[in-house]
Length: 153
Image 1 (cartoon, rainbow, N blue to C red):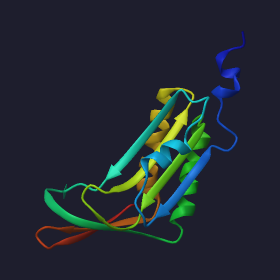
Image 2 (image 1 turned 180 degrees about the vertical axis):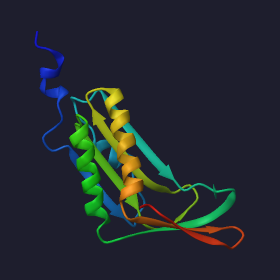
Image 3 (image 1 turned 90 degrees about the horizontal axis):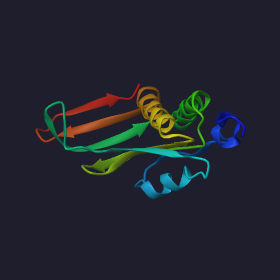
Image 4 (image 1 turned 60 degrees about the vertical axis):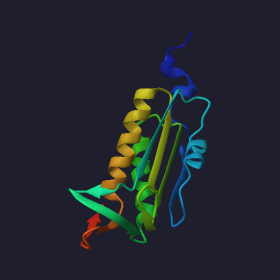
């Protein structure tokens, strides 16, 4: 029997980036999960970022996301770094822009890999790098009438 790492399913897929998008419409968990389905993946990690009702000790009423025209290209660059570092079978990431309310999905990312540990690590790197490197900005409106802009990078 060949060593486990020689099996093609243990390697990254040839074209692992399945879905990258920035949208002004509601996001779908099902769409992202389906995009990362792969018969060779033993682990799939999914992260969902939602609009919460507070930030920094203040109540949030609503928020809006906007992005630079290069945001989708930067998202691809981040995804390519993840697939270069991990044996990714499939990867997907979508981010919402526009006005959102508490409870709305703001970002959904998922990664499938041959094993769960790799999937968790790759998904964590994907969302962390996306939040730090992709030019998407959040404008929060608080219940006391104050506002703040939060930059992703």
